Amino acid sequence: MTPATLSDPVGVLKGFASLRRLAGTYPAGHPMITRKVQELDETIQRYLERSPTLRVEVIHGKVFLDGASFDSDEPGNAQVIHDLSELGVDSLHIHAGVEPEELLRVAEFLWQFKEGPVSSPIADQLLQRGVRHVSIGSLVPLDTRWRAEQWPDAPVGPLDPAYAESLRRTQDTFDAVASGEPLKPVTIRDLVKLLVHEVARSNAALAQILAVKQYENLTYCHSVNVAILSLLIARQLALDEATTGAVVEVALLHDIGKTRVPLGVLKKPGTLNKRERKLMEAHTVLGAEILAQVDGLHPLAPTVALEHHRAVVGTGYPDLGDGVVPHPLSQIVSVADVYEAITGARSYQAPMLPEHACLVLARLAGAKLNTAIVKAFVNAVTFFPLGSMVRTNHGEVGVVVRTNRADPLHPVITVTGADLSPSSGEIDTSARTATGEYERHIVETLMPPAHQQEGAAGQQ
Ligand SMILES: [Fe+2]
Ligand SMILES: [Fe+2]
Image (cartoon, rainbow, N blue to C red; front, side, top):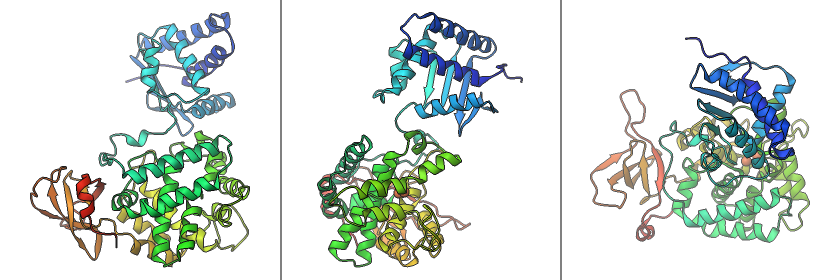
């Protein structure tokens, strides 16, 4: 089957890009706009005569037409692709029946989007503008593609209230820094208090942080989680209260430099090119700079921001000279950071289950991560305390009634309804198949009904 011909799919993207610029520069009805609309419409209609839909996708900087890759070496094209991906546009589907007017509305929409993120779904916004034959993918402030069906085990339950509150406050703080406001040490101190005294004391919150994550894996969520995981390590290492508070504070701020990394790079799905990787890696230095300018923070906050991607053997970024070993606080944050990153969903990749994540940590111990800290982390985490309500990858909901000493990630549960209705039998989730695979995994800790919370056994 020969695909419908389109000599240059980038031409369509280019057409939209220049129409977008024209629509933002000249008044409606300007002859330049009319001409561009006509040109673009002609190209698209020619294609649609042979195929009901024109699908252009940009994946990792490459243009795909109806799923087939299309090489584009022209420098001008690279710029258009870059501009569109800066806007978060990476798929454009145009269906037969599209009117020139709709093309113009899409271009105007793209222009307005540049001025600020949109609140309602893209499809609704386009419909309101009378656009029914064009759909745009990923034109949202968050890369939410990982919510796709490819991850059927995504948690669905609500978050622990204290945890949700800490996420909200951290997001506000990070958003303020991103918009150029100074970081307020008092806000950070309050957040640290909330994390230490409430979030870390809630079994439900801890379980939600340790499990795979359902929400957008953005800097603020990641930072709260890393702070709590670092706190678990600090407790396990028997650090005193003041040092533990310092660990939580520096961990919460370790990635603050990401507020200075372009969103397009931060949320780009898949691998980054060299330039993007440099920008991303710069979050360490940028973070240290931001934090060094704020009076009243823990003095090690800039150090940890600078060093948390460096390995215990003295490699990693940024380059601080051969053999420079990170500060112990940085080493704690690094362990929490790696665990959090791999149990969080990333684009095109389902999150790793806790047991796999622990194996990864074990593999990194000694070279990248400090072995003693990795051990402390693995010992510190009681993934599923007695009484926690969990869901398995088979969809069963149950309450943890026993933990397997040798296998804390696969407890014994009694199966219940989501409302804790009478048990319908016990399941040992550590059971394996004939080939040695686990029969089931716990994929989510659910929030128990309010009256049950008191009954949950304490965190070890
Ligand atoms: Fe980082
Ligand atoms: Fe991080």
